[in-house]
Image 1 (cartoon, rainbow, N blue to C red):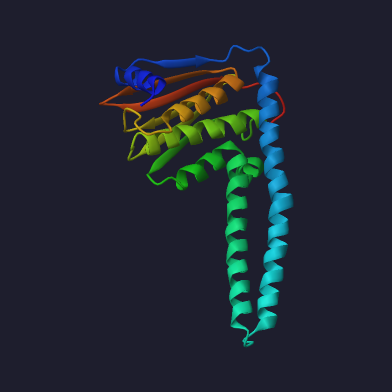
Image 2 (image 1 turned 30 degrees about the vertical axis):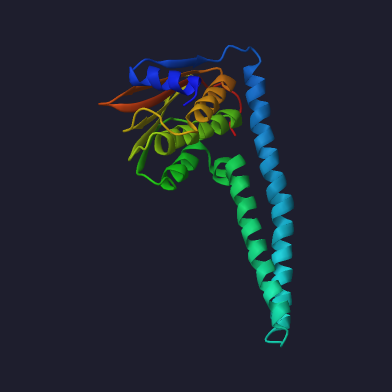
Length: 233
C-alpha cells in the first residue's frame, strides 16, 4: 500500500472525514469544458470508428456468405476469424464510448442513467431520487454520473461491498449525492485513483466531498454540489 492510500485508509477506518473543496474560480467553465470533451470523444467513436466497424463487419459477413461451402477451407477460416475480430473490436468501441458518455445519460438524464448503472452492478444497488427537476445542466449530470460510478466501483471493487445505496436529493439550489455501502475500509489497488477521480468530479462542480467509514455503518460518500440555474441538458 502506498503512503497516500495508507493515509486514506487510516483516516477512513477511524471515521474521520476526507473532505475536498473546489476552490478554483474557473471550476465551472472547466466543468463545462470537461463534460463537452467527453461528449465529443464519445460522438467521434460512435459516428466514426463504430460506423466503420459496422460497415466492415457487414462486408465480411457478405463475403463469407458468398464463399458458402467452397472447398477453400483456409479462406473460410480466415474470414471467420476476421468476423470474430471485427465483432470484438465493435463491442470494445461501444464499451469505451459508453464509458466516456453513456447515451442514456445524454438522451434521458441523470436519474435513468444512474438507475442503469445500478442495474449493471454486480451487487444489489438501490437508487432514490428526490428532485423536482427532470434534467440538470449537462456538466452537472455528466460529473455527478461519473462521481457515482467511481463511488460504486470504490465500494465494490476496492472494499468488497455486498450492497449499495445511491440517493440524489435536490435541496434549493443544491444537489446532495450520497453513495452508501456496507464495506470498509478500501483495500484494492485502485482506491487512490478512484478517490482522486471522485475529488476531481466534485472540484469541477465547486462542491464538497466527504467520505466517512465505520465498521458498523460501512462507507458513505457524500457530495454537496451547487446547481446553477442555467439551461438543462
